Amino acid sequence: MYSRSSEQGPLMDSPTSPSLLNRHSVKVDLMPEKKGLPFLKHVQYEITTKRYRLPVHRSYNDFDVFRTLLIQRFPYRMVSQLPPKRMLKGVLSSQSEEDFIECRRRGLERFIALIMQHPFMSKDAMVDIFLCASAEDVKKKLRESFKNLGDEFLTNWSACQAKDYLPSDVEDQVASCREFIGNIESSFQHLRDKMERMTQRSNEHATDLQLFSHELGMLGHCLGPKQEHVQRVWSTQRQCLRRMSKEFTTLVTKAEQKESLKEMDVLDILNMFVDLLHAYKELWDRHEHSMFIEHQKALLQNSTSNLRHGATTASSLAFSDILGVQQLESNLTKQENAIVTMELRNDFSLLCLYQETQLFLGHLPLVTQILAGFIRTQGQVHAEMGALWSELGFKLTSLREPSCSPDPEPDEILSPSSSSELCSVSLASSSGFLVPSIHGDPSINPSRPSSCPSTQVKQIPHPSPQNRPQHR
Image 1 (cartoon, rainbow, N blue to C red):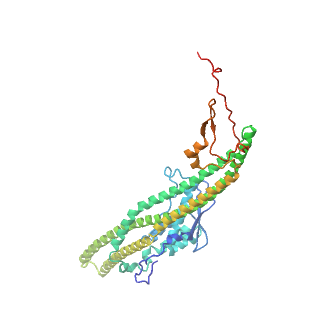
Image 2 (image 1 turned 45 degrees about the vertical axis):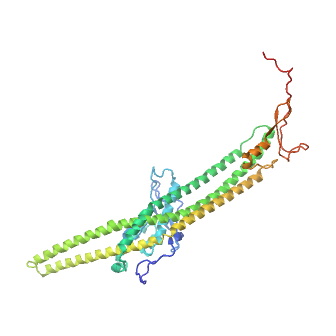
């Protein structure tokens, strides 16, 4: 992304394809067993990259030391944050320890992926050490590497020429980008939180379906009453419930796997974009407070020291020998070199900030890609769930005992016209009671016996006036 031979020098070329989509070049897996003493056990992670291909084992403390030294090595670059080390009590009380460890694993994977995709940090010796050294001496080698190399200003070829590559309005550009990121940061955090909640609800929905399947199995093992005809009917229902319980377990497990994997894939991309936002904001804070203010103070102190030593030199010429004058001149030369170094470092810091700004802006096309992936994932998940529900309905229909007539549709059940046709009331005779009669069903033929059980209604004669009881 950065080219030395181009006309822009170290400035970033216009990016064409965001690199966050290539995050699968890094894989961080959870080790099955915890290491350490029984009361001090910690989780180990296995890191595998396409560049080195050999897996290495790292603890969370290794990641923490690596990030601290990486910020000291690249103080003017975006370094994303690590996920929290421990589960905060009271804040994440609804999250189990297994879910927290899984979220932390994903966060560490995003951290390494962002480092590997950076045009400068990915080529540094400290990254090679962290991804290749053995677990026993990785911290020692990282500290030795930083001690030998120093920060990026001492090793970057453009450090002494940074001012020549800076645009005339560089401060206005980075300031406008900072304001832009400050405006969109909260909205992207809310989008991330809402997507995490939707993913969590999907997992809870799958858990409820599993419990529903369990209850179906419990019903399938319940015995019916002792009446023979009831036992015959309930036996068929029990068999159907047990079979559907197994079908629910199998199909819901498939749906849970498809749903969680697709939703977490889109969520990881959004989380990486939010990590970039936080890293850029933290870079601005370092540049403004740790770099810019300290440089200005150092320049002021050295200017005052120059004036003081100049006055001392003028007043001491008559009283000191040649060696004293040479020592004063040497001190002035060192201070002038320190001032020049401070100015060069300040220009290099601004150049790096401009490069990181261009790097972040190159990932803005990811916004619509994340939205498109979210819409596509939701559509696929709901379509697959609809197909699974349809398959369950077909299997349930095949398991049921053939009925005398097909099940009515919900619209037919709720229709007033159908209810009036099925349950109309007619007058049997002038001397009898009102009895229900069925009209509008050509399938019922009184001349042939029906396969459906029916209840015969006997007509009760109307009592004659002579047989009526006398009331006083």
